[in-house]
Length: 382
Image (cartoon, rainbow, N blue to C red):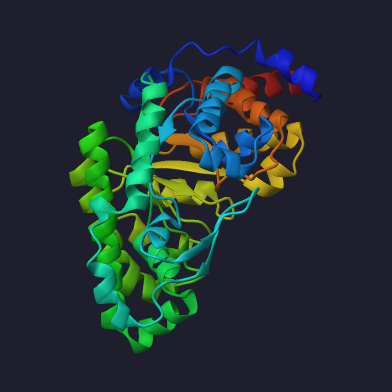
């Protein structure tokens, strides 16, 4: 399908609900215009589409506002975020972070080389930390520009925060050599994150939250270390965020997580975002009875490098696999959509949502999929 054909086809499937109406009715088990969707962490990619560098988006609130405005106008994607990205907490307490002109930031020098430094770090008051205050102010500015939009709060998980504060190779050795000190560090990461959640709630009255914790995947930790080190502090964080924000957070863990699904199914979260390397149907069967699911369109192979038809077909497959999840399914990317993702692939994703996800109801195949299957049967018989 060409882009011109796609735009013409999209006109056949207009939206008839706002995001808020759709989510409320879907959660209540009512039929909605189409299945909910989420293209993860899309603002950097959108800034690129609109001709801005990542640094311009990051450093200039007016650019950030323009990106959100045009994203809403051209893609009808709303929503605001004011939270702690994967390396924000590390930056706040002194890790050296590199921020490229175009691209994702990375840790150059973690601040905690020796655990003797931890007591000094723990003296920092997060509610007076200039990095945290700057992040909160950005949220205030965005909300002032878009008062009609909801605002959410992403945060990093305890193990991911710890790995940006202390070198990850030392963190992994700590699981054997310094387990008590590692627990102290993880507990402090929880407390520091919850403190920001309280700041957020004081300003915005609560809201949605997603925990991103890529370092807790089984590829890195394995089941034993996940159970011993990550899980107890992840549970503490979930409880703290729920209390501060008034609702359960969601969770996203990149990489391989299926060996941990039995354990993760016990987490008291609103939803779980399934990475594209995992089988969504298997996740539906194991975790679907416990909370909502999201995912798992491949962000690189499909969204960045795929064709319009690749995106549409992958979204259709994910809807088929995920939509019958007992507690609901949100069509989404398996992780952050990359900078350089073409405009037409965003539109292809949205088109597939509207066409194949139309007439969605929690726990059921959407009418769009059912009608497509019926048409295929009729054409085969003819």
